[in-house]
Image (cartoon, rainbow, N blue to C red):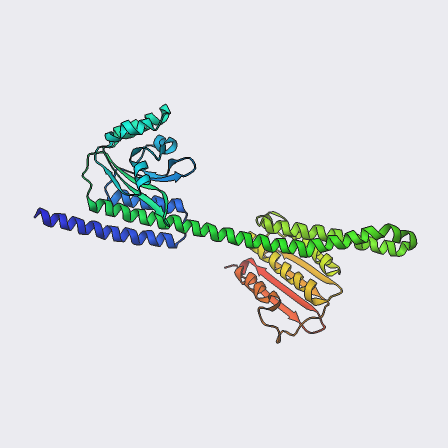
Amino acid sequence: MAEYLDRTHELERRGALAESLRDILTILNSNRPLDEVLDYIVERAATLLEADGVGVYRLEVKDGLLSTQTSRGLDVDFVAGMEIPVSGGVVGQTVLKGKPLVLSRVADIIPNALEQMPAPSQQRLLTSLVETYSSVLAVPLIVKDELYGAITLYYHQPRELSDDDVELAMAFSDQAALAIENARLIDQAEEAAVAAERSRLARELHDAVTQTLFSASLIAEVLPRLWESNPEEGRRRLAELRRLTRGALAEMRTLLLELRPTALVEAEIGELLRQLADAATSTAGMPVELSVEGDCRLPPDVQIAIYRVAQEALNNVARHAHAARAQLELVCRGAEISLSIADDGSGFDRQAVGSESLGLGIMRERAEAIGAVLDIQSRPNEGTRVTLVWSESRKE
């Protein structure tokens, strides 16, 4: 009968383990923060291994110390202040040997561990730990063949820990390693995305602002001599110099906004559109008239979408339209917002231009994301008009 009960208990525990591992994988696939995943792993390890305390320790290779990354059931002061030398204690031995260690009597580690901790405060914390727990199971935490640290389970009462207990603890260690590696990959992907975005901005800075400033510097060099020989031409060049420097400033501000995306919702939409208009004026060498009507206080997602659509449309005007002038208009009437970008340039045949050409697909996606209606009207040699209309009533 006792054997039957033991077997039943073991089957139940293995079933609970399988369910826990499945839940952990679900959390991993949801890309939740690492600390949240490790907290869940620690909670499940404590439950299934019937531990009174669990700690995940991380090795700081430079200092040779182990610090607590997350825990359950351990004293707050111990978690906050304890730094375990890798050369001493059961956790340190687990890390050094890279193998699980079982200690039935925690008090056995005291003489050696205290020698490794000259600081009185650390000795007090270790002594308190020994007085609280009787048995310990520690397993190494290895991430992609790299020794990351250890997971340690503590028991108030003396406990005979079996090979199955060790195997179960190692299963949780493997899941923790997977969570840590997953977090690293996410960080690397984010860093790569940031690096790519910064490279793009650097290219735009070089292509746009640098060229504009170079043109301005050439005009500034010849302007004194030109003014003496031909004042009328000098005044024309001075106006051009003013336009170039104003445009370069607008382009620089636009790029700085890209580096700090929150600024797109912090600034007034009218000021953002003015910077786009000034930048387009400088790039295309044509005037872009801006008109903002009404009290345009927009929801953050709507403001960003309007800014991006205006930006893409003005980029098309500057690069492809060969226009003499353009108009940028924003009208805010109650719950309805209307954005219009029009030019008198070469236009295009909408039947011959794909939806992804000229950034049309991007503008449509921006509009759809906020529930707005985007209309693009254009004919060869008759210019282009892009209109976006958003209404609070259509938000849902």
